[in-house]
Length: 423
Image 1: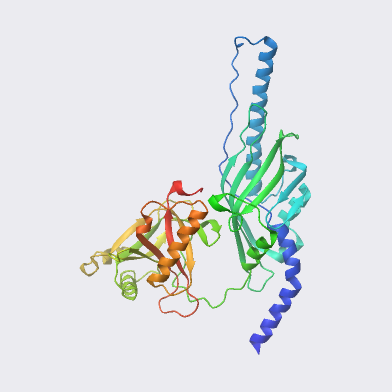
Image 2: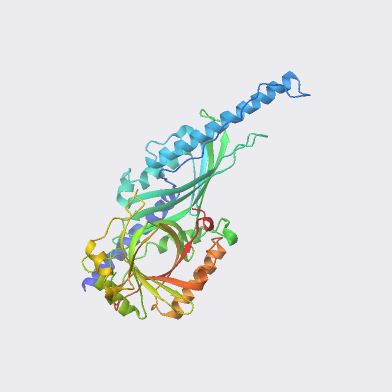
């Protein structure tokens, strides 16, 4: 009876709030709110003090003036990027409206807006600076991965688009289970010369990695119903999961693509052993690492011929701002060197970018290899290049405790070299 009553209460809440929530979040998710990122600097051309052969004095002065205008425009673009960086760090509080056209327009996969004030109102709501925002949202934040573009064409003074890559998250606290929706993508800014500061943003278009990437990695617009479904799918309650084996190794989400994710993991220390059966491998690692709580997931690497399979547990990781993980207890280091554990290795794994595909079936060879194949096909479709030779083995991760009940969480991993991704 309690379960039925709770279910009915949840249904009433959803019926009364979902319509309003959809309309409001359509506006709120437009926002690319970014953190600090390095900005490319532009430098003007040196003006040489001479008159070229065949050029009269009037023509030379015009050419010199054109070079100076290009230099001034490049400086204004540089200032705009710095302004955007400050706005993202401060969550657009304040928003420097002088860098936006009065009729600036904004478009994302779910909605479209026009005018600086409409943009600012959405930012304030998503940041919980309005009464409605405080009721609907919490934990909104964004990470900026890159800023590119904004070059000046010296022949006509036009400005190329500024393109940013970002990861956005927002929690819908209005729902009882408080789901967090995550989006990754790009924002394309149309920038024009003009305004009191020399340049203005005239239009902004956002694309989501999960729905807007076409064949070859090019971004394309899609029907709004696809975007709405993508968002609502993230608001569904996630029940019946198997118990986790430990605290998860943290990562930075770079891309939430269709059927896969791309993540950046910090450097971490791991205990690695060869194994034949996973249950036996768990027992060995538990014996070596007793005294601390290893992190999830357990990671396995299996060559195509099943020779020399390895299993590892993360033990600790580099905190934000650090490049190396902290030390682990000396007792574990000493234990790993005992004769009985002669095959054990305590290793430091450097920071890496990993493409990840998920599966919830039992972690058996046919399931894992099928998931690995699907991940490789998705990466190829979206222009992500796995390193040569990575198809000679499978690497997979298991998060839940062994023999646990419920929906299991398994993943296949493919490490991506720096030249194989745009991050």
